[in-house]
Length: 460
Image (tube, rainbow, N blue to C red; front, side, top):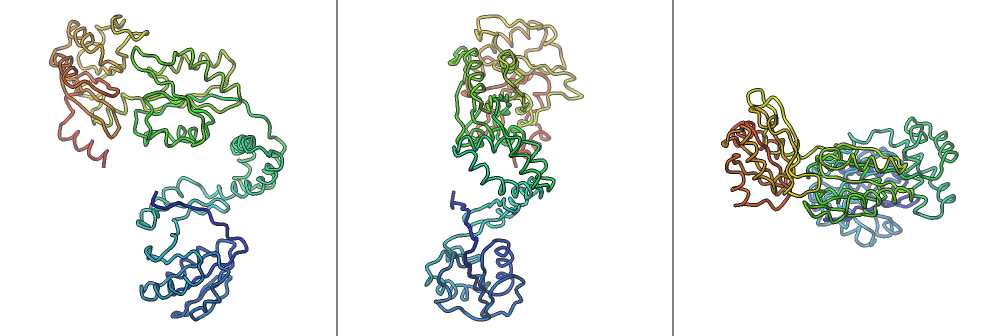
């Protein structure tokens, strides 16, 4: 961060503005929405100011700048701005000089205003247009009704603080209240009724587990629901396919349990993961089981759902973009195509126990059909078996294969080869991260002019 965004209470405090013209008007329009007492000096421009404020058409005396929460200087002319800043410095109050960050102590962020709820977007004063563009995106995502919800929270807060002195207890109650029918009433503008209902219906929270798909790696491929659940979690149980960029989006004070696994190295047995999820839910916590890709595509999500239901734990599943879809999109290679593939199959490259020595029990005759795309998860260690078996069942050795390592991530690496050369190419440059194999005629589209244009646009 170039600057630390802060929330500055201004109730019953005095703010002084020194300036002229449109620059001054803009800052007055912003600050008049706060409960501050405004004093305005406009020495060179008798601009009409529409605000409840004390207005002077002159420069201030130094004595008039005392007892001030902050001072704003707003002149388009730098010489005037420097004069105002020099005068303001005598008050030793925090100073903002509009559009001249080198003269300022602080900068105003771009603000999303939803009543008592305000969101500031700051760039340290170096890119205000970027901050405004970001504000536009956030405003589109947060409806105006959130102002009613913020008013509801403002009224309810002292009552819950009195009823729940412990901060952890109070936080959990808040999380439940903001998802309750009372919050729905508040958003509809029925704030009084919402406060009354929230006080009547609050109760103890029961634990719940959410199995959440984290997608193939790019944090922007998280679903909105997954992002919300990460922000609400008391506990996050995550695997090795979930990168730091995604974990950085989670609630900072959530308790985290790493249960990462690698092929033939299950550092945390699956049964132990089941026990952990049940244990944390029975403590009344909101648990997010975060899994790379989609929980129900080679993620053992079905086993975890079954174990939780047998233990009587409430469980929900939030799907994610699975690796096959993410890697195909990232590389610009379609998994189906009218001219090249009319079907697609996802398989795992190792057996249930993860031992490459055990044969894969699959219908290889069906998987070897022409014009059929085969996507192999976790298939690097058994690539020799997969390629050899497909060739024996009729797939041609020159069938294209695209190896995608760390798909959708900044360090993604792609190698186009063929079934006959797959084992040798993997041995020459073994993947260091998770890798996926796309086998079939569609892989030949990788690197074509059309696909290259698609990929470049997607990463622009």
